[in-house]
Image 1 (spheres, each protein chain N blue to C red):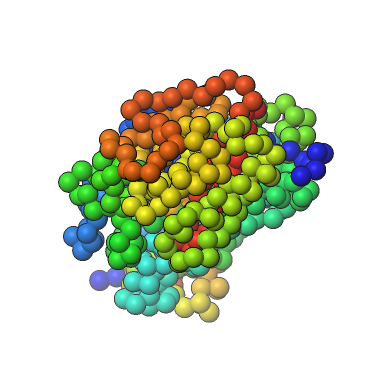
Image 2 (image 1 turned 90 degrees about the horizontal axis):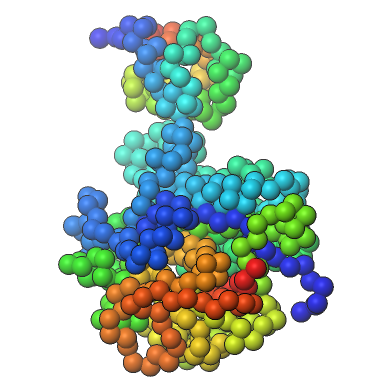
Length: 79
Length: 410
């Protein structure tokens, strides 16, 4: 059964906190990974690998580069 | 040597070892004769004949922020912890990035990462590997991370020569300053090799102690009952600086890094050359480089790893190259053998001995072997004389690498 957007957001917040040290509470849908959270491309790869383990959804490299905001990732995982 | 050569001083010390998480706690433990060797409980312990090791007293993941620690191999974690301590201890020197260098070595590199990443790759596929796998397993990784942390641009290097790596790093750093490439160089050694494969491989070489019923008594350099080395982990890093640069900023000076000598046995890939020719050559060259006589050397922190083959050859070589008068000790009796980290921590200990004029006693040495003419400190710590004295750190590695560093009191 698919996780709700809120559950995915919480899971993603934990992953991002683990990898970058950014508080999970700052991981909100409108945030841009690069501009707001200062997350670089290799960290995004780490996040994608961890998200695959957590949500069972593979994020291919050519899709990953299009995921600019937290909301983009939430939508990708839900779909 | 030229009389007007640049002189190199030591202005900062850092260490994380099996007996303490920093220099102060480590040195206190050594003076108290405490062993850092304990039984280990890892899941692989039943598959190897050695069931103990010198695990770091303070786990580096307790010290480093988690996002940082997860991108670092354990050997890199140790290096960063020790380098930051040394840098702060030196007063965080103001130095132009292009005049700051780093030489930090490890004997084995990111072996824990290599092996765990291989498991991940085999079991779950390439795309489950961390994008930081390569910088975690590469043997220059510890040097590179320390260089990044400090913004060093004069050159970041990793000299690799098994258990001589840390001492070679300090020698290379001295040469960087003397040749004018840098004013300040952060240098030393690190190792995190307590893994089933390493223990199995060293055991296969018949190099390790198997005194499983007495881990704290297993590292017993020069003792008749010694049966091999004990694996330890951690890092020792020092800040080296041109004397001119250190004096100009009013830095505290621990000691002069006065000379370094190198040689290669060219005898056997693992066995020491029985006459100690290579070891004598390294010590002799180091004394010449420091422009001192054997009689000036009052203390030797020996390589002595508690192996049947190496310990006595080394002290016989000390007697020939330096004399029978220095107070000799092996701090490996307490820390175990940190492989590439050994030259780093033992340089720290040699410098502390000079600074505080005291030599920590070798523990577990109850029945000295035959053929030892030098004075080995055991039973109780011994004082060093006041005045202008020197002390030596020896490090030798598989492959026949020999490195000797000479420090002089400030």
